[in-house]
Amino acid sequence: MPFPASQEQIILALIVIVPLLLIFSFLLISEEAFEAIGFRFHQAVLMTVGALVGSFINIPLIPLDGAVIAVNVGGCIIPLFITLELAVRRRVNRYHALAAIAAVSLITFAFATPVPGVGITMPFYIAPLAGAGAGLLLARGCGTAPMLAYAGGTVGTLMGADIFNLANPAVLASLTAVAGTTLSIGGAGIFDGIFITGILAVALAAYFGRRIRKMKIACPQDSETESG
Image (cartoon, rainbow, N blue to C red; front, side, top):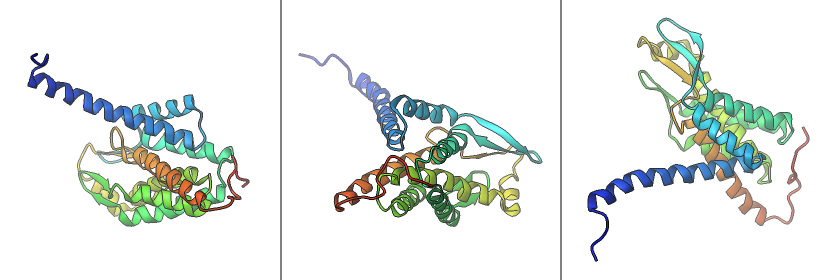
């Protein structure tokens, strides 16, 4: 019997279906990551959708000569809100969270490269690995490692890669040399660096944290909250 679809129709279907499957899979991973840091299912879905939609929204913050510094909703405001929520509700030790943010800030600042006409670039794996490593070390592999990894990975990258560089007058001048430039803190379009950093850092910390706990008899820090 002849195949019901032509080769061109099959190729067209794959072009449409494969990206949709990849996006759906990433949404599931993102939702699970937000659940891993203490959000309920509906909250995790809301944070995921909010981060994705917000990645298209830049809020102008500081006007410059022919340029503007803005903050991205999905890549800056939402990660800051989530990290603040974790700290206020004491889901993580605040001092540990600050230590994770400071460590990742220094690492990402060292690897970030300002590129005129492009923005601030950095190898994609640096921030997630730094965030996951800081979370695992500070939590000693216990249950709060993913939360610390998220706080360090997102806010630390915002501080080290974006804010520290933009605070340098020479770097700022080179990045705003082209008229009409918008420097978006935390923004790089859909699936921007900060959003992906948070998800990957949480996933890495959760995976290796489970492996570490399997080698321990008990984990004294494993509880729903940490005092601090």
